[in-house]
Amino acid sequence: MTHDPSTDQRVAFLGLGHMGAPMAANLLAAGVPVIGYDVVPAAMDAAADAGIPLAQDAIQAVADADVVLTMFPSGQHVLEAYRGTDDAPGLLASAPSGATFLDCSTINISEAQDAAREVTEAGFDAADAPVSGGVVGAEAGTLAFMVGADDHVFARLEPLLAVMGSRVVHCGPAGMGQAAKICNNMILGVSMVAVSEAFVLAEKLGLDHQAMFDVVSGASGQCWSLTTNCPVPGPVPSSPANRDFQPGFAGALMAKDLGLAVNALSETSVDAPMGELAQRIYADFASEWGGADQDFSAIIQSIRERSTSRLPRR
Ligand code: NAD
Image 1 (spheres, rainbow, N blue to C red):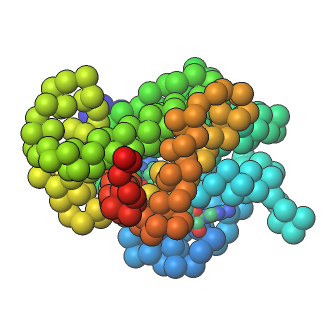
Image 2 (cartoon, rainbow, N blue to C red):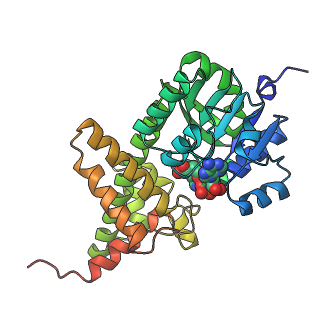
Image 3 (cartoon, protein in one colour):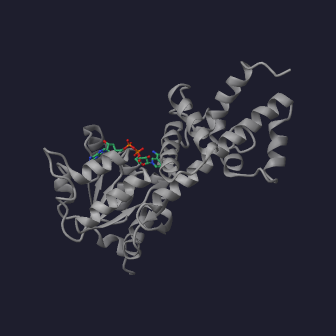
């Protein structure tokens, strides 16, 4: 029998939410020793039902960990957990020497770099490894991991990440995993708005959805937003538009990721009006229009709605 290096590493899995719980379950199923913890009791109950061994608190979870894996909502959660508070010691003060801090949350690039610096200053190794693929990918073990880490840290973590994902890309040093994710999702947000605007224009002009799809999918407008996540029902039967825009990739997450992109644009002084506009469009879609829990391709419905109330120019 061949030796599987992923099972050598004891993993403290912190954050057992929509993504974390199925990721932890996949590690366990592959024979990786996992101990989980979440601050929310309902998440702990669900994880216990799924057979995930649990610690009483974060400190107990990381006591014997080789890898401290976090899957949290935001960078603030990650930094607070690492640093601790006046009342409770953080993970940096609690993990055993030799541990590697692996953050799979989607957070600001600058926060990921701050976290990695503090991890390194505390004597540990750090990696950021945000994912794409959503809950479906987390459950199926087919996530894509974008990893920011030094070469030796990446080499150590790759077998573990390969248990939870089907694609693991080393993007560079700390923060570059987040950078890759944010750049991709900025393209995705802009391209979905562009494809949706074009479909609404086609509708107004009397151009059939299928005819437009047949032309554009083989022409220079071709992109993932059209050929995989097509915002109109029909041309791509598996796209969320065929099932009342159930996500998929929820509008709230697109709004969050574009917010991170805009923060990065501002920190780097990049002039990117398309990315900034996409961020405003999706922030409004998620918070005002009711698109937070719908697939992000439902943006087409908000465009249609605004277009019916707009008078044509004379
Ligand atoms: P979630 O809110 O369902 O889960 C996060 C969990 O972290 C919660 O259960 C929360 O209680 C827990 N948590 C927060 N602080 C904690 C702490 N200090 N200790 C222990 N637990 C703590 O979020 P999710 O959908 O699982 O997403 C997690 C991350 O993955 C986010 O950064 C998100 O942007 C990213 N992501 C999500 C998806 C998706 O489809 N859901 C896709 C790609 C990336």
